[in-house]
Image (cartoon, rainbow, N blue to C red; front, side, top):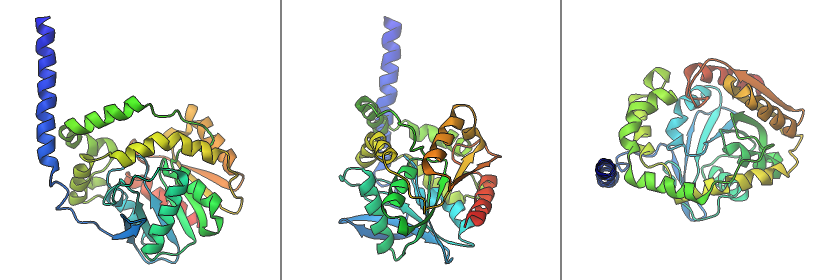
Length: 309
């Protein structure tokens, strides 16, 4: 019992120290980082819209769940694509430089916020929507509701709209909030995050971009993103019931690891739901978690986009 008491005391002590240090460091940590694009008004709150290039066609990039700083996370991909296209990254409420919002995180609200943010930033449809992960659900909803505004979907390893995902239990959100409060990840992330994700200078990120992403990772998650996570299953179910428009072409880009075993049936069901006009291209060559972080993947993405457009 004495040994157990000592171990528990050490764990509590580490958490307390981490909590105090995290609180102190978090106060002004992000103030020195300037937003890259425009902060536009959407429903009385600010949304960050960052763009590159002046091409005839406009590609709109949208982040996956929990991306801490999308405008920088996608920066190398944006630089590559901007040689031929106008490329725009929209940071959802609760992400990057955008404000938080207490508006429910539904497909309808995401769609209207994207549309308004793009309009306020000076961009006009039709768009080539390029979502990553969960954003694919919002973009399928967008394309279904406003097919005339969508020239095509370019899906980057997006969530399937043909298979329901389990709802997030409330206790998971509470655990997540606790982890954010103690801030233990701020000491671990610099050691493992760059190598694990591929966010490195060797993959086309600048030294400053790597630092900024690490700082924002210390602040990832808030009430807005918690609500998004809680609503995620419901957004999938809603889109599953909708008929995807045949007028909108779809290019699905998947890492090779996502087209084997159980992932194979996951992707095939998704393609079937989207229709015969949906095509898939498998990209080989990376072990990183996000398809667009790896330099070789990005080259393949750009080539696939050129062929699709």
